[in-house]
Length: 348
Image (cartoon, rainbow, N blue to C red):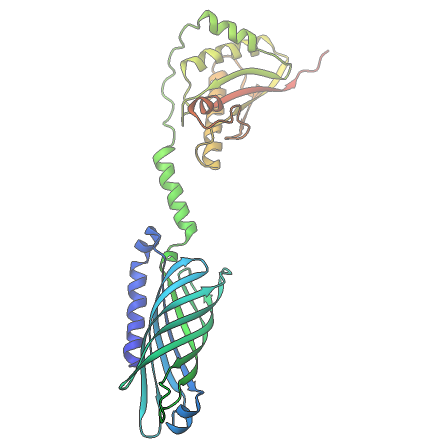
């Protein structure tokens, strides 16, 4: 019996390990547990009259559904045997029950309570089992630890019958949690990587510059109103398309006016070109995207009579949005490059 239960334990652990990636991916909360141990009878009739006073061997297999982080529902098969001088008493018990646990990271104390039917020779009796144990994580999906148990096989109270069989057990258990088969950090990296590949592909290299359309009188009037408003700010935002660092025609028209203003004002010695992105995407990706936008603007200004040493790039990602909404109109205003004067030539 013990050999078959041990073989069953090894088969169940191997099968659960093989299925772990699929179960983890689907989030199926399965826990398998096996226990091997020793026991001793503490009931007078069993230890004295029937002679089961030596150490017995016990084992069980459990399959549980993780209902909450603190509670598992289980089906189990327990078995064992106690030897006497002239015979051996065996026990096989299918059980159902629950385990309550305290999830403390790598260490999880737990208590179990199970009820079922015990088969011992020709006897079929109600069987009750309880126990306490501690799981120590030895890998992300596996845990091992000691377990102390108490078993109780109920007997009838007819005259001449033996009293209830009661025994204590001490063993070692091996637990496997299927939905922990893949480290959640790894799953998160895969999830973010897939979303990034799907939604935020790297921007293609800039193509040849498109000729700027002739600005309308309304656009020229707007630019004249925004350049400059304060001594240290050039309020001329250059807007970009989603996930792009390529200049749009209206952005090129705006840069012509920024370049003209900087050429007219040689006292402006250093301008910070600040790139931004909307909130979609990771922090790292948005910072890199906003840096590419700032670099694109600096490259354009440098090619249009603005000395490169007068320009400095700064990447701010999705920080400091000018529009806090989660709609396309807000996102459009936040995909921008703005200019800030950081150094002026001292007045003579």
